[in-house]
Image (cartoon, rainbow, N blue to C red; front, side):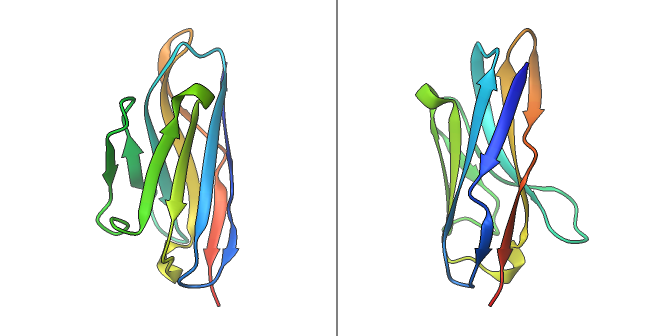
Length: 118
């Protein structure tokens, strides 16, 4: 019914930047909050950033000032601009969205790997 597809992950050196994208498609009536989570090696999945339908962002303390979340409602897409990357940002990044489809539910993407290493 709803598919979320992330892109933009890869290998980057410490201090570098990456931009992740997540596009939602399928039977969509409305998209409410869109979020980015991450799960590092041996760690639990954690919320990185969230953005409401009217564009209000919220960030985890660990990324505030370095990451920027944004969305394009016309394209059903959410972005995560990541600057000043650190090795501890290495993780699989997942997109999540609360979507009104045939029912209102939470949908996940498949994840995209970000590796920060020299």
